[in-house]
Length: 62
Image 1 (cartoon, rainbow, N blue to C red):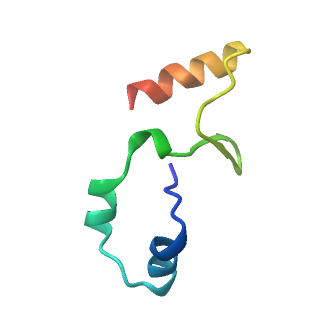
Image 2 (cartoon, rainbow, N blue to C red):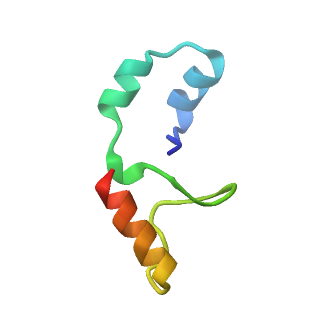
């Protein structure tokens, strides 16, 4: 999973001026991008295929 930040938060991370523990404590799980295919990330898997439903079940277990 990759966290996405924007604005001042993104600039702080880019500059190396951030507290990783604080970011993780404030992170909202629903904003987490999951890797679907190699290099392809999305908030939720497509549910119109068996593979997508299996991925959704796996993501829910985490």
